[in-house]
Image (cartoon, rainbow, N blue to C red; front, side):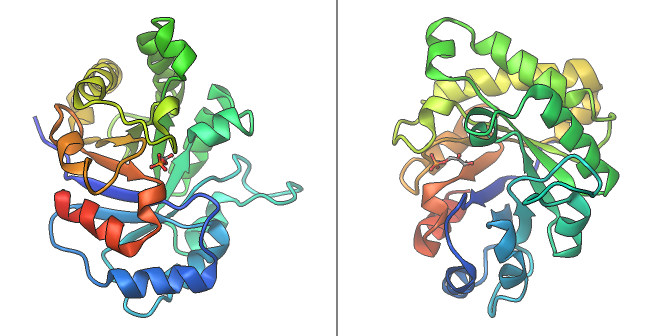
Length: 247
Ligand code: 13P
């Protein structure tokens, strides 16, 4: 069984314009050998990130969302081809804010995953339950439905990641305990094996939801947690560097 390389990824959401993007990479400087490190800036800041003076070229870049269509009359949207041309290697798909604020469905997620793979980019498929769903004992059913829908677009051996982000822990300061994370990651790992067999053992499963420098090491030590997807604490180079150090 192969163990995935650790991953530390930052999702800036709708924060940091081009100037702040350049300042961030200058302040972060080079990253240590070991974990994969990635930043998802706003799409419009991708060129600033690519050209940021002092950016360690090993820091991977991605976009936070794409449209599933190849191109066309979709005002305001970003295609996978454009994202790739602008320097993205990774794409977040199905982030909880996309699902719950913008109404993205499992079918949308599956279509986006297919398009991302078609262009040779690596999707990061986000899944997670709401507090109501957790309280109603639906954790397993929700994760199962979300991951199965996304995996339907993924051939065995495809390069992708999964991010478990419990909705109740995103931007709330509430963090899943390492045991909560281990339970959800175990469920997800079992689904990947069921669908793709041993090929899926190399797929990293990240935890996201109020990850900070102070809790990152404990979360990454939890069974089955291969890395973290960080929102708020990825905006400051110092905090993000602290999380990278914990990996
Ligand atoms: P926070 O780390 O701000 O809770 O956000 C998590 C997240 O949504 C990362 O994609």
